[in-house]
Length: 103
Image (cartoon, rainbow, N blue to C red):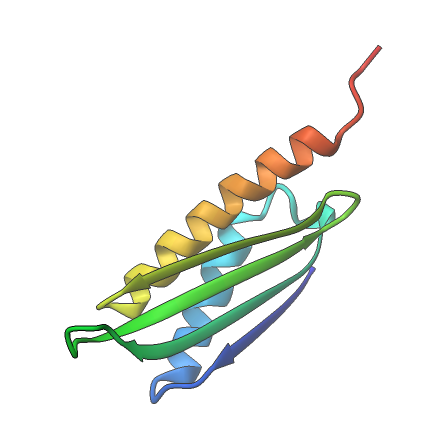
């Protein structure tokens, strides 16, 4: 499983390390079914002028296509945690649906 993290913010190294550790933990039982993971981290401004961060996780799954999750929040560490947890659940669902039914 290849993990690529792209971060366009000041704390890029620490955030990338956090994202990798969370992904390895969440996907540990499915890592043989995940081809690659791409994570994009960045800052955005809301309509009200508040600075928020976003985390986009895209999983390429073996024989199950691509699954993507986006989360936005004031604390980028929390956004990473929520996005990775949701991506893990989504990967399990995609892989379950993609498996042929046992006869």
